[in-house]
Length: 85
Image (cartoon, rainbow, N blue to C red; front, side, top):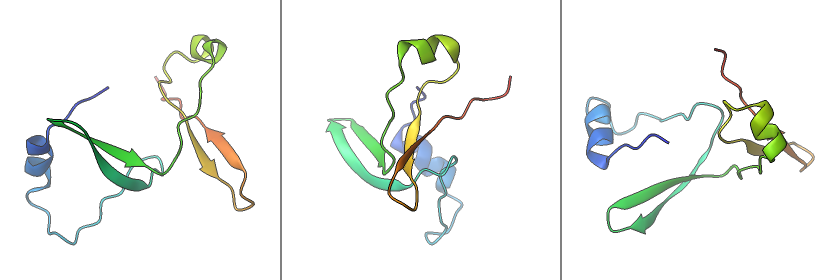
């Protein structure tokens, strides 16, 4: 997991106007910010995290997390992105 401080994020966004849209790679949709401790805020997304079986983890060791996305008919589809090495 990669950690970033609020200060780091502010510095990276400092040159952008306030009305600039942020897009999250991989189709993630922002849900909210949630306080998780005195000095910790968690960014939450609408996509629920999928459970990865031990068999899947052994077969795909480069995948750390997978998410579901809703289809138009309401079904949830698990999506897994495997980076090219």
